[in-house]
Length: 151
Length: 291
Image 1 (tube, rainbow over the protein chains, first blue to last red):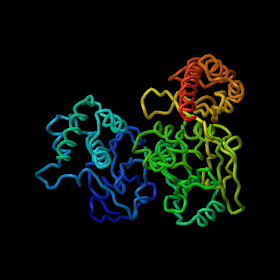
Image 2 (image 1 turned 90 degrees about the vertical axis):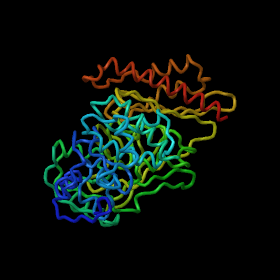
Image 3 (image 1 turned 180 degrees about the horizontal axis):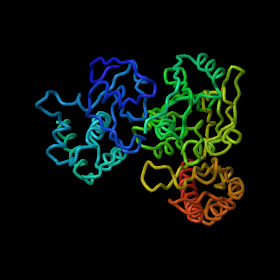
């Protein structure tokens, strides 16, 4: 499979979850595992551009597909992309455990809806749990990123 | 929180999948979107000896119209159906119901065939298909058959599918002109399974009287429940508030939804009555504005 554009190969048991392959085999530990049953959204990655739970897909199912994780977002090691920068400025994270999943969800969401209302952002955020922020700053950050991406 | 070991096949054609099912049907599970099966496997509540992954069978993913009916391939993802303009136009009940299914990440992966084969009584699509009088095309090496919703959904997580059969497609008849439909549910958090819900369709005659009603209830019993006596009661009425209220009371008569920590049986009956009333009211408004 390709992860963030880089070919990653491995021979694994069919039962290995995609999330574990990304973390343990590809060494990309930005993808976090929370509940491991599809509720919390922390492990959200993009499969062929669409946000999915990597704890509910087996690694073998991603054979031949494109996977995007949080590590692929920033343009360089010393800079953040527009969405990440907006999260940073708006204090849209505290402990940061849920953040990679939220970024992967919102990155795809802004591609599909470049000018969302706060209500639409709330709805799109429904599949990601955050226990620190109370969500308000996340919504502000996504809106700020939308403004910057649109100008 | 990791699945137990299993054998794995990922056939690329329908024929190969049916061959594998004929050989291993008793000991295997079909892996479609995996949004219900994989959580169960992670918890080890399900430990199938073998998975037949049908995600590589592209021919099972489509939405088409055939003789006025909507035919949805089993591997069509929820998101695909949710965004299909022809579905929103001709079968808005499905579009409305899908909005209640999980979250975007789940809908990107979960499939229509998987939802009906899993047959969770709290799931939205089985109830919507029940209200729409849908039927299910299934196939095995032994042949094909089409099963109506009333025979397909047997009980909790149980359908009429034989171990070697695969759901190929869902067929949904067209709604008649002058119809309105609505899907309403209540869950503690958006995206959770419904504590109670209702999918209804109503058809109004030219004189403004109800000619046909269908009411299917979510989380009301071991399978989607059709409230047939309430449907009968509505026929001939003008769908005014009092007839809708009376039909909602009738719809929940005799139901015994399971009591659990989220709600007692009595609470759930009250909730189902309210959901039915709201769905009927909404559908009646829509039917009136479509005539």
